[in-house]
Length: 485
Image 1 (spheres, rainbow, N blue to C red):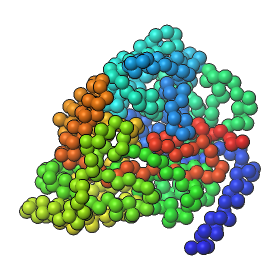
Image 2: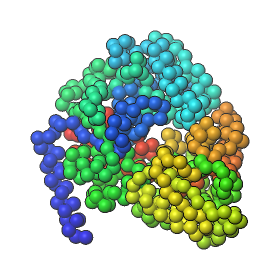
Image 3: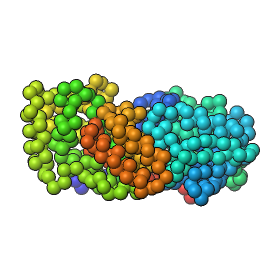
């Protein structure tokens, strides 16, 4: 125990010396966990690396800063009317990548195109409050809403709503593809229609982004070849201890979202909601927390994470007061009524964290007479892992993710109808009641087995800057290029 600790303590000053050495002008090296080439992926659902590139090269009306706060982007200022139904944006005096001036007309066109690209997805449902996008003046556009949306600016800052003209954005960074890596250069403020900043070239650095498997990204970080690692999830968290990563380098984001199993198989045993419930009630969620070793992880049996701002308290945790043994006994009685052997295929990602979760599921379900068979992601399965961070922490995000439109698995049309009514309900209390009713309907349907909140982690070296843990796990690249004084 003492020798590894001593090595880590000796390594800290060596890293500090390296950061001050002759490599001060090399690009910031960022590794995003994912498949090679994924920084350049296209489509409505982007992997982590592609989201990073999109937000770096095609900002929206607003953007996120390094702490996950909404800041000006193409719009340098805005106002919200007293009724909360109109957002009026004044665009900056800038140009698109092709040299065309940014105007209300072409920004409106770009925004409508971005909204159209996500239509038919869960994000499209999040944007359902939008009634109309209008041009008001040369560089002024208005977005009218059907109802108040307290997190509307946060939605506009999503990477998928980065605005494009002729398939190119307006920065804040320029992209050069180097084989499978993305070399990104900060654009000088005056070239973006912003006030000039003295010594810009001395204040910023280039950044190189590559997508790598988790084990390789961690190894590069430990070797000093990567300054930042982004996109860490539950399946790779145990690699950090195994790889000897310093605890001081790990950043955990305090996120909300969906982390559990969607039931996609409907025949046989899974055709009955009470049987689907048996699988959920048998799981020892506290044992999963212990197995993963993530301090402070929140386990839950609810579909909507507990403690959200619009939670009216009418839906609570399931099976209160019953021990795991009592729940497993009840679940076993339901399985015993099924004449055939029950074998279920569970699709999980590769990685030691997923290995540990499957071991827990296998043991808990074996205790009730169900055999779990693990298959790879993308293979035919009865249950699949869902691991998605909430874009905003309200009930309607969760309901949209579990809707029949999102098509994650077993859904409920009545819950969808209630959620749709909530989208147009102006009264906040009535809207919360509709959300609670919709959650209750989905809970009875038992189409999703929640385990807890998602796990998101990053690695940050002493040379890096501009990254802070935040509830949305958004880590834009531009702040990482600013040199520390």
